[in-house]
Image 1 (cartoon, rainbow, N blue to C red):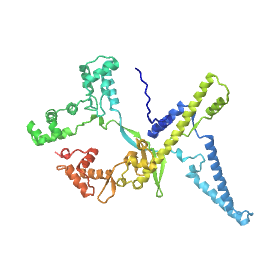
Image 2: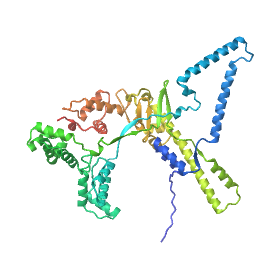
Image 3: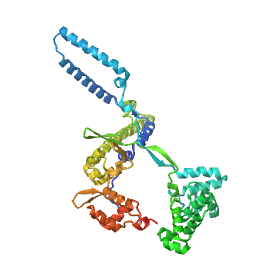
Image 4: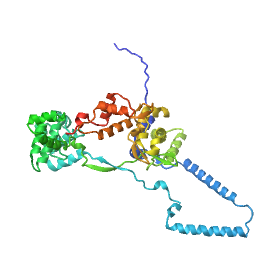
Length: 504
């Protein structure tokens, strides 16, 4: 029997305009410029350029300032007629001004050009090294080595299954199933293994390995092509027979098991440590990429000036032709079906243009507001560039001052950069937790991590400090915390435990 039930639910849904604003807020400057270009192409009701009202307002402001300047100059001059002395003074003034104009012809005259606009000057942005896709490099090598279409497709599937560090952690059986379901191609694990062995001969050495042991052995085999030596043979024995002991740095146990001297083993261990455990993270295939800052924070006469990078972003307006067309449709008493459809199309495009313009303005306001709060909190750093002056700051702290949701601040801080007098910084760099020292002063965890990092760099490598000793060291510096907290900070710094840092 069918029953009808009524239920009342409270749901929160975002409007299309809010969704558009959220997506724009997450974008950095480069992606935002691309989105603007796409919207200008897709929506004919959206145009670039200032609206007539805005231009009229600017014209009135310029006219008013010109009239005011002229009025000031006229007030400085006497209203009565000039006598002979006054004419002589004016003539001398004209001569001096002519001389200055003549002297300025050789340099700096571009500033007198009416068309000069400092915003149009070419700006230079920081250039950083980023990794190219190692998968693209492997695909190029596939086409140069493999001839069969099926083998090439198998190789592309295997390369696409590699992790970012270059390892193949998926079972070959799973890739066989992928071929069957996606391409309706029957393959075997033997066929995949044959192609995988070919990929393992590609650069960078070690790529396509299924374990750390296999990765290191592939690299040793590649080095053996240029000649073998006893150290390589011992290194292979250490990896194949004593891998667990090697990872735990139980070298005396390895020497006893392989019946070799410690001096001989030390050379083999040094050879192994020079191999790359993450072949895809090699710096060999790097390229230069320009990072465009989203904000500029410059100190001028003791004040911090915040600017949002507008880049090549044009002013936006709703097309006057679309507005006039919509007005004409509204005046018609009766409309045919094609006219109604045209009316809906025009209205939809105009509404979309208005929503987009409002979202862009709201994005700019939110970005500037967020950056102002961050600069106010971290003012000492932006004035001095000293990382020790960075104050503890969470997303919640900024959100409370802005009276906005934490998710909004998180979207602003995501993948955005700020250019300062002391370099380019990711916005997330300024967010960190805080701890209280013995003096009751709240400091950022960045300072604690910096002390730990410095202490570990300067420690005795034959007897490195463990977490208990690091805890005592921080306590002498005025930072009292639990050992597990110190261990957590050490792991965040990607620093191994003392046993693994011990020199051999």
